[in-house]
Amino acid sequence: MINCRICNTNIEQFMSFGKMPIANGFLTSDQIQNEYFFELAPAFCSNCGMFQLIEQPDPQKMFHENYAFFSSTSSYMQIHFKNFAEFVMKGFLENRQDPFVVELGSNDGIMLHNFKKAGFRHLGIEPSVNVANVARSEGIETLSEFFNLELADQIVERHGQADSVLCANVICHIPDLNSIAKGIKCLLKTDGVLIFEEPYLGDMVMKTSYDQIYDEHVFIFSATSVSRAFANHGLELIDVFPQKTHGGSMRYILTPIGTRSVSHNVGELMQKEQKQGLHKIETYDQFRQKCETSRKNLKELLENLKQKGQRVVGYGATSKSTTVNNYCGIGPEHVEFISDTTPVKQGKLTPGMHIPVKPYELFTNNPPDYALLFAWNHATEIFAKEKSFKAGGGKWITFVPQVKVIE
Ligand code: DWN
Image (tube, rainbow, N blue to C red; front, side, top):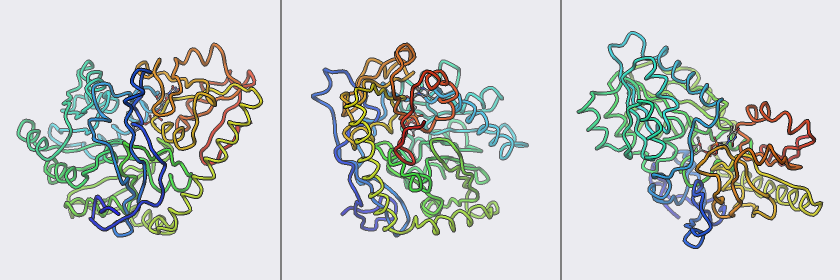
């Protein structure tokens, strides 16, 4: 039993995915003996509605100078962040005097570069130095530090308060959400706006996309949990916009309480969450059963293909695939290698199960019989790019929402 990270109520894990390594901890063979593992176990707090991990490794173990995920590897995500930036500029920054935008977890500058191009004052906060350096090389102002109240004070002193604080796939990574919310409240102008988007609990439960659960994602949010967590710090959820990215995300808009009217979208989404049963612990028991079924089906499918001598290659060495491979027990005996376009992942082994990660060219030069789509959230972009794989008789395997071979 532990206490909820938000409201301190006693909570218990409803399942365990077992011992897990760092999701982005791609490694060389000489690092295997010192590989770090922790127990990946989620819990749901029925008091404040927060879905969370019982244990999360230290941030320095996950985000550092060798961080392996670069947002700009997906061309679809580049378009998404251009649209996100325009949504903010048009909807919240027009007619403001020299507005200042801060992005927490700005990665390689995929979103901020749009603000820079449009001449906005901007600042990115990105603790992983290697990805931050990519942004800096493009002239995007970036600090490599972990965001907290102290840093918020320093930013305000140096640049003044922000008109807009933005985050994408970041807030759900930070365990001390209460402290982050305090920092954001301090950083934001009284008429400023906090906008962030994250994988959505409703989608994860509906699609059994349990691979959203890994070390970095200490929370999986819903409108209900976001609204309650930020209200404690004087920030009000005033609007929500569903997003297709990362397999189903939600964009949340928050402002200091009472400064803007609340859209009907918020109440409607919360009602939908009740109907889906996101507030009930039984929902998570059913989710656990579906995860177990998914694991059984995927393992059986891969064992069958192995017996038939079929070649299976993974597509996209995602963070999410670390959960799938370690939970299901999928190793190099099932998946020959995983193809990935990210140079720092290539030539390494996947965390925990040690499947080799190889350059994309090895996939195209010698296509397998089956490609296991770990980057299922980028399926539209990938299927458009890989028409010749299918035309040549190659088949895709997916596991979200169900394990199946796409004929
Ligand atoms: O929250 C997070 C999300 C936003 O991004 C982070 N904690 C880490 C990361 O999670 P992920 O690794 O599961 O994200 P992706 O975007 O699903 O990763 C896609 C992977 O697939 C990358 O390594 C790039 C690779 N890829 C590829 O090889 N060919 C991607 C595409 C689109 C491709 O065509």
